[in-house]
Image 1: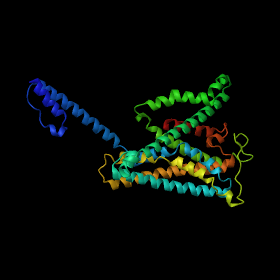
Image 2 (image 1 turned 60 degrees about the vertical axis):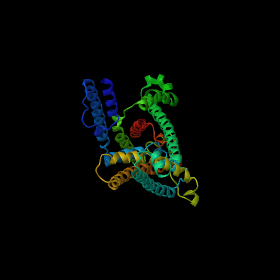
Image 3 (image 1 turned 60 degrees about the horizontal axis):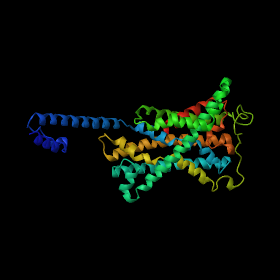
Image 4 (image 1 turned 180 degrees about the vertical axis):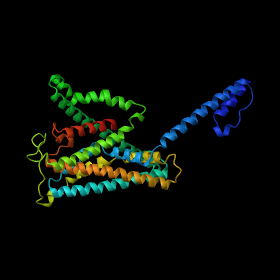
Length: 369
């Protein structure tokens, strides 16, 4: 009797909940087995419902913040140096502004195109979207590209974290002379090793990042503050000759000059600037996942979901475009050809507003790693 009951419940376990119907009568063992099986199925269904409910919480606003934060990383801090690579004239600054605005619009359009491909294929990641629309045989190409880009981004993030943390720690040590013995441990290399072992590695090994959801908003706020701060410093004259921080700046600011020939405005070195912009906006791999997350659980059609996602993309690229353009224009205008690859490194250590910006960017990059 038990053998027969086991075979029946084994058959039942292979069926979906809708196919099972009523319990099969045939003994206490069979009834107990059936009760346990139904309990497992109810728990699985409950877990799926909770996951769907959690995923359905994505809104246009939360998607906008997530996308904007994903774009505003290390690339935005190097845009002014990229522009300085091909021009140090006020006319060239205007050309650089037109380039970055045009690239922002183009990147936003292509980002939405990736989401439309995801809507057509139903794929939730870049590789599967490519496989469904282009072919499985070449699906390794976008996956390889995303992997290389992620590795490169993490490397740049680690460099920025080391530079910012070392700068902040050394500034703190300068204000507290009794801690001077710790100065060797605050150099760039020891700082990077400490950050990697005690902060970055535990964060990367975490299984649940829900507790860090607020960091997207925090990081976006830090980037917005940095953009407004850089505009403020460009307009208040603190880093102009005779200004409060002119002689204290690590790299002496060099005012922009007028162009004397076409080569002073635009030249092949503008490709360096284009490369920096591409790095700043190269997060298209997250388009399928964020699109599917936004429409999951909604009752609207796919076209309605695309319109909602287009609003999020528009808002995200508008925010990112403002921050990137502000940082590029203000950085090049303030420091000219002497602007450093990491914009924050140009500001004086005694500039408290810059120190606050460094702390904000440090937290943004740290949790975005």
